[in-house]
Amino acid sequence: MLTIALPKGRLGEKAYDVLAKAGFDCPSVKEPNRKLIFENEEKQVRYFWVKPSDVHIYVEKGAADIGVVGKDILLEYEPEVYELLDLAMGKCRMAVAAPGEFYDDGMKTLRVATKFVNIASSYYAGLGREIDIIKLNGSIEIAPIVGLSDVIVDIVETGRTLKENGLKLREEILPISARLIANKASFKFKNNQIEHLKENIKLNLNDDDTLRR
Ligand code: PRP
Image 1 (cartoon, rainbow, N blue to C red):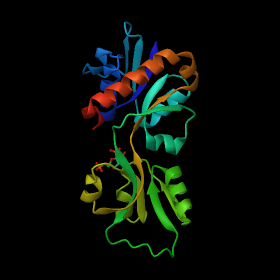
Image 2 (cartoon, rainbow, N blue to C red):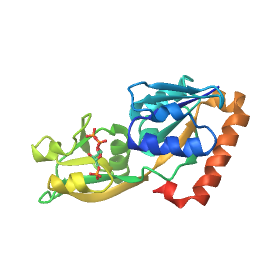
Image 3 (cartoon, rainbow, N blue to C red):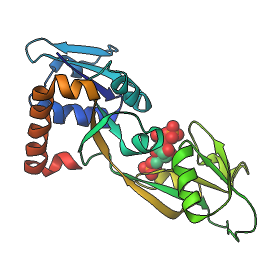
């Protein structure tokens, strides 16, 4: 049985379609109910729906053999997993944003609000810029508006949240996309199944460009 942790939400649903197309379908996943675990005995596959930022924990600890996770999470938490494939979906950017009027004269410690403490810290360390990190758990865009921070480091997808809150994108830090990851022991002991899955996904990604959007 291959156990797969999927991130709850739109990205997870798209990722499921890719995995199903690669031969690991489990039709009950699509049933409109609140179940979180689904199994298809015939295909020897079991899926879990988990919070996107928890997928790597299930995979690292071996509760799931494989999972789908954003590159942002891999860079932030550096879990001990294998990164197998760029699924080329869930594309967005990690970026610095600030209110339109904010000007950084470099004279004061920069106050940075973010969920991504490690990514933000290493970005500013690379620039040699001194910062204070304010760790938040969501709705980061509010921080500079109410004076909690000067800038934010956050994910920008369409740019709509920034725009509608009067913030401007200032610097792009990294491009982000969803990755297929594997538990290290599972990769060894279930290698045939995992390699088969990976190769089928690759073929489908090349064939069907609509999956990549
Ligand atoms: C993410 C991110 C931004 C928004 C960007 O938030 O933190 O707020 O999406 O998307 P956009 O550029 O298309 O507007 P998410 O929905 O994950 O919520 P949270 O960070 O507030 O928890």
